[in-house]
Image (cartoon, rainbow, N blue to C red):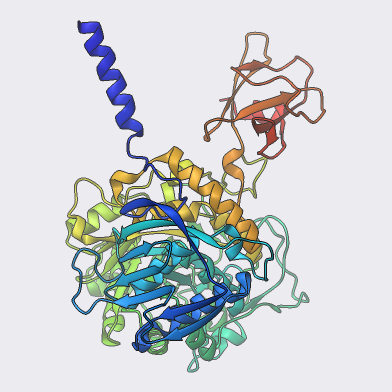
Length: 634
């Protein structure tokens, strides 16, 4: 009887571990709160009659629907304020539904009609994104597609977000991305109901926003020398190399981007990164530094200028603003004044991360400031700076936000904290009563390699898709009301163009989107990845680049007694077969299949592997030098 009971318990546990996966196959990301599938299909008519009332706030949603349907399906949309025979209907509730809130929606798809109901236009827009995912993948095409039966399955969906802050950070400072490319990035993120674009606008490699009262920030600070290769290892530019690589956004460009984002229900958070990461600003205005340079400051082009070894990074070239210099605060007042006027979002992010303090330690002005203000450590010097900057930001009617380093030395009274060095900074800030956005390297850094480094642009860390999907923004020990949400961060030191930016963002951005929108209890990796594969097809249709890295196996090696390697392969995606070769040829499904740890032949130099699903190759051909594996054994 005990054995039977144990067997029953084991079966029950197995069921529960997979029981969170919904029993539909719709492939919607992020997973809706509630889905009820019905029989039948809605067939898109050749001319869509859209009933949308007379609220002008729905204008951008109507425009979005028109563009999507006319581009791919060649379908015209006739808009009427009242149309009993409408095939699609947008409804703003006269009495708000408290369940769905400001961004939620109810989507009803029947054989005769599609109805999206919401309290606010944002909800209608997100309901429309879900409806688009119910249509054939070709709806994402940028040109007319013939021969498609434009149908959507009949469903009833109730949906609303878990968090109000659902973000992506796009670093446009390390490499400049055009206004059109930023719009392209917005177009992709809104499909997954992400609503916050954090623009990292300034750094050592470039100042990307026009400040009219400080013109050198862009005439000097926006340009460096073009280098191609491994960022951070470049040779220092010679004086005669042209400094014409880069660019910036005029204030008119910013206004256009803000408006475009607004029409897609996205807020833009501007970041001005100070007091560290400020070499572009110091190159433009050297008097902002504590250090009199032997040579003229120049905008960094990817040559080494920081020593990242040890617990505290040190600058080779002083890239900081000087907290003891009153000119710095006048400078920042001018910058924040103009930034605040351009961005309606209530927060301004003022950086605060990775500030090297070795030049401050040598500064007589800093030493005098420490005596005057009774500051004991360089962390307290930065805290002094951050609190003064917080007052500047608040004087412009905005809220101050910074990376979690602003906690060191004492945080300002009203500061919001973005926690990137894991979640501990967010926990500390929340326990002090501060608002927090979680964006930890552990789960949310999109510049990290997505599979083995032999396959990816090399950076110092890896982050697999499955690990990103493990992200939980709310630690058990804090008040959940103080966690505003989460975001993923795409730093672009090694990202030179928009195609690579897309590759690094997707599909990990989908994982973040589901985590910050969907109910926690609906998280299910296997089910999620099945949806990701459907989204890959939609990305193919839209010609958006994405990473197939989840199909690549992970490699681990140990050494046998005879010094040969024993190699273990692990797939993060279930249901795949891996085939391999050691003879320098290119394996397919007629080669040996991996079933357990394999011993490398004594004189072999290369392991090649490829993953299949059934008889179809689904992964990339991965070439792993055995010397590389050997070098990883401690």
